[in-house]
Length: 211
Image 1: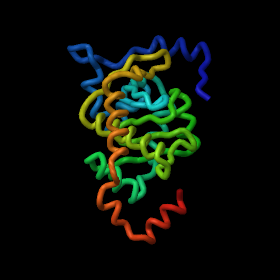
Image 2: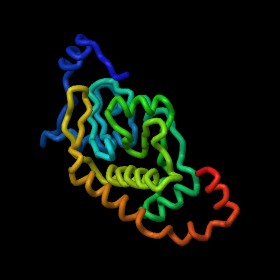
Image 3: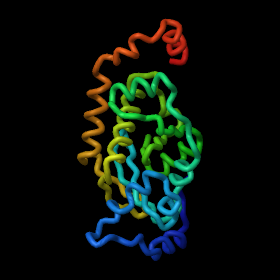
Image 4: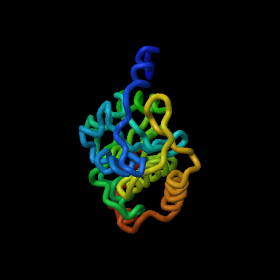
């Protein structure tokens, strides 16, 4: 549960924020380090950028105190299976070999803590329990959406407004979220890439059993 006492809230409120560059925007200075999971940035006094989905709404996150998000994205996760990764790389035109998916109980609790069905931090994608389902059309669209956020974060900082618990949440209609939604719907509406259509029959049978 994401609960804190009144005293804890007061202490957090007194904690100074991270130093800001001359232009007043800490996001630009710290985004790359956060996406790379540098320990000095992903700490109690650090900052990171996070995109989440509340029904697939994007965010940028500013962590001014310890969050369950920090523990989850530092826990390893699992790589995308070969078939899913190959398909998504062909559809989105990007390398997802470094992407790690988090689906365990801790991941689920962290998603609940930030009010998300799924969220993305750098190359880590975190789902509520039962939310990762690459065998279903909706699950694949959700994954494509989050992978679009991975690509967005590789390109630079994303927008967000700080909340009382140190997490900055972007508007569901912001440009990053609109782009991710539109891109996911577009790429998943297209026919499967040729390499995927040529998968041997026995592998198709295995995929059908997993579904």
